[in-house]
Amino acid sequence: MTAKTTHLDPQELAANPAFTQGVIAPAARTLYVGGQLGSDGTGNLLDGVEAQTAQAMRNVLTVLAAAGTGPEHVVKLNIYLVNGVDAQVGYMAARSVWGDHRTAVTVVSTAGHARPGALVEIDAVAIIPE
Image 1 (cartoon, one colour):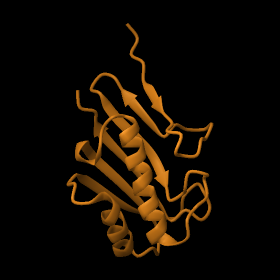
Image 2 (spheres, rainbow, N blue to C red):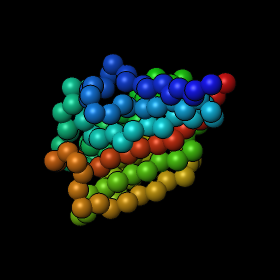
Image 3 (cartoon, helix red, strand yellow):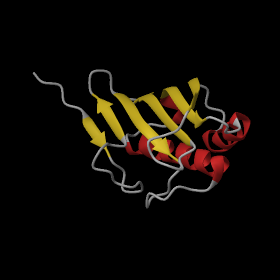
């Protein structure tokens, strides 16, 4: 028997032929949320780290909801900030959207992202409740 993953591409997010917004792995009913930028549903980047971080978190929440899960089921967040970005501003913006859902978090400073102008990228791993 071959295991098959399910890709999630919510209509609320910009479509991209190079990647999917999320993948459900059937072995553990685990959702892997692909890196989300601070871009709106048309793919336009918002201005500044605060706006981009809040939007990236909203995009993560959109993918979680499309899989039938939520922030309470996220087991890991990875946040990648461009060098020189004020991490505290990013943290406060993320928390304003994310709330008080505790999870394992890794924050990494990077030289840049694949998309010019992107200041933050966030990915996540979540369980999907039965």
